[in-house]
Image (cartoon, rainbow, N blue to C red; front, side):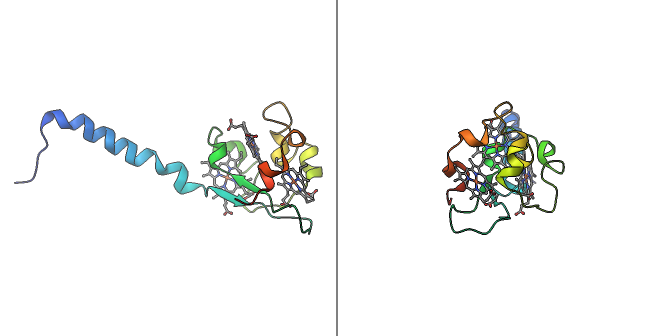
Length: 110
Ligand code: HEC
Ligand code: HEC
Ligand code: HEC
């Protein structure tokens, strides 16, 4: 005979299953930190990194493929200043403006 859990366990089992299957979805599909392709050669600062986990309040489709298409494109501060890439949100309205953030927020080696 196979094991049949008592009736009172079943909602706990359902909850466990729900947590198991929903929690890792974000982590599995989006790498935590991605290095942005540098367009301009330099020695400092460190390459800019983007944190998916720091943006989990946003929807994937808010950024992909419109702002950040499937194949990564390089961009510069000039582009962000003109409202492209990170600057499409980090304009001081939807999110903090790039120039008001510390360099380390984006350029620190993590
Ligand atoms: C706030 C903007 C933003 C959101 C929201 C976002 N991403 Fe990204 N994603 C980026 C950026 C920036 C990159 C790196 C540059 C590029 O690939 O164009 C990236 C890269 C990726 C990559 C390629 C990683 C690599 O190593 O090249 C995958 C896969 C990805 N994202 C999946 C997701 C998924 C899945 C979600 C939703 C759960 C998501 N992203 C939400 C901005 C975002
Ligand atoms: C909102 C995130 C963010 C902040 C804040 C930020 N940067 Fe950047 N920076 C980037 C990204 C993204 C790139 C393009 C990828 C790369 O070259 O690493 C970049 C590129 C650069 C470059 C290459 C040339 C260029 O114009 O693209 C320099 C130099 C630079 N940053 C310096 C700085 C300095 C100095 C500060 C602080 C005053 C700073 N950054 C703050 C995200 C940021
Ligand atoms: C779709 C809009 C959107 C885009 C595009 C976006 N961000 Fe953000 N970012 C946010 C929001 C909103 C926050 C505030 C935290 C939150 O609510 O998720 C944030 C927070 C951050 C923070 C933390 C700021 C702090 O001081 O706490 C960093 C660093 C950051 N973003 C870097 C980037 C970089 C680098 C890019 C481009 C590769 C980028 N973001 C593109 C919306 C966006």
